[in-house]
Image 1 (cartoon, rainbow, N blue to C red):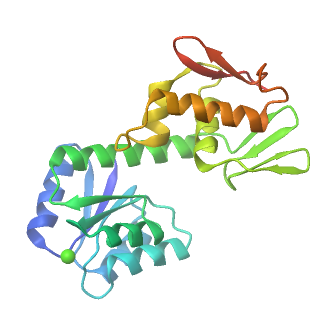
Image 2 (image 1 turned 180 degrees about the horizontal axis):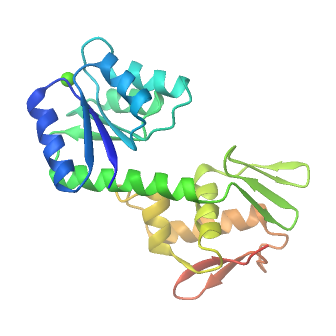
Length: 227
Ligand code: CA
């Protein structure tokens, strides 16, 4: 169960969203305009915000940007109108985590909500620093170094490493990587995972052909040898 804030000015849409989320056992807070929504988001610290874009008093983009400016990390799922590709880009630029195109199905809504809540739970419970020999990875700052030299890991490589680290020496399947790092909405193949692992090994392994840290588990996936 999570506490979810819906910021949406159209009452039928707000009620429909509320019904869906409550049926899944979530606690729902609502706001009907941008200013009230911003206040509730700050004061009530919800686990997730569903944010409409066209809102009276303060629009969704401005609201989202303001929350991020204040350092508020709450996951934000933006609700965009059909076909407004620019809206989605602007929303993601403003700091939204994901978007949902209206009209959407209940299943789609719930899948996105679950994915965002899962991601936050994982992040809050997982480690912040990983050390592998002389390689040091800081997941908060999203940076990595070998001794003093910075290693330029991509966001996906960092996310894969984090998943491996959180598994605490247990194998992580290719499917798990795809689900957690690429998200269910993308369509990469398991080969994509292997390519990214190869790139990661070239950056962090002393001898990429004979990996010391990221071990291949044949037929399953990969596991991280504890440093
Ligand atoms: Ca609206």
